[in-house]
Image (cartoon, rainbow, N blue to C red; front, side, top):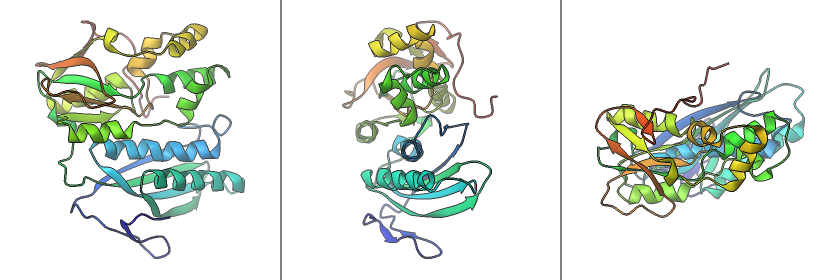
Length: 294
């Protein structure tokens, strides 16, 4: 089912999508088998929903609402039909849940499963929320739970079936879209989704804005489940919280004199200078996800 913004859907050489705002927020992402998902860990429906979530979160971080998705699938010739159907059905359902439609794409033969998604978003008259808007004195805040996807990945790598909620968080992220849109209406200065890890993504804001940040771990909400999972694996849960990627929550900076919108938690402050400190010190662990790391 297509939303009212789709004027011409699939079936012609191109789709036609209404852009009432006069501007379109556009983002694209790819998922590659055995790099971003594994078919022995995730169902085809999990993979399809993940593809939509990580793309929709990008335009939501700009303050836009998704209106249309273009989806291209690369599949090996021996791919079971239920894999292709499951991915496609989940992408369509997830788009519809967001009030958007899948308006086109492509299907090609490939050596492994590859999903390429482009999302179009409507700003609804808002100014785009950019990474470059943070100012000294701002409050740093987060929306969504941190470290859960990284915990789920560590459990899967360890062959554990314990902590099913953490496993599910890795398989299918659930971005808190409403919090991002509330921030866009609530005076936010800078915002990004948390895809590479909290420190890495806040680092993008710091670099773009020419500022530094100080974070306080005691202000961060960490579930007992996350701590228990880390203990079971002999891991540091703070490494997951600070550097784990693919949660697709949001982090942002707000003026100090503006109440935080619903769903947001203060975790630090913006200051003059550069870099990010955690409890007054440089974090010694990894910085976050690296696309070309082995």
